[in-house]
Length: 50
Image 1 (cartoon, rainbow, N blue to C red):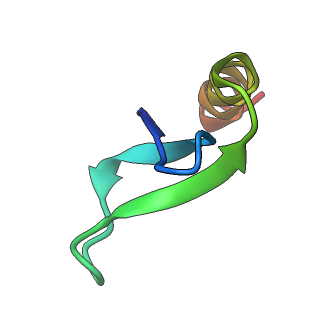
Image 2 (image 1 turned 135 degrees about the horizontal axis):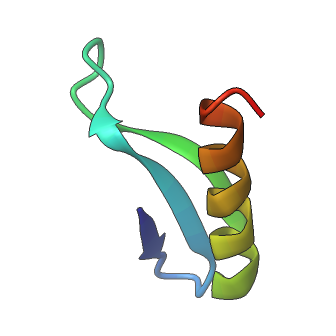
């Protein structure tokens, strides 16, 4: 899940909330949405044992 921050950068969050904190886990902050989407695909690949 990608959200745009106030400073114009994009942050990638996990789909599920962290049970300890109740918030979504931060999976990285990126300068462009394209970079965030590229990293999101990489995360999905490794989650499936890449």
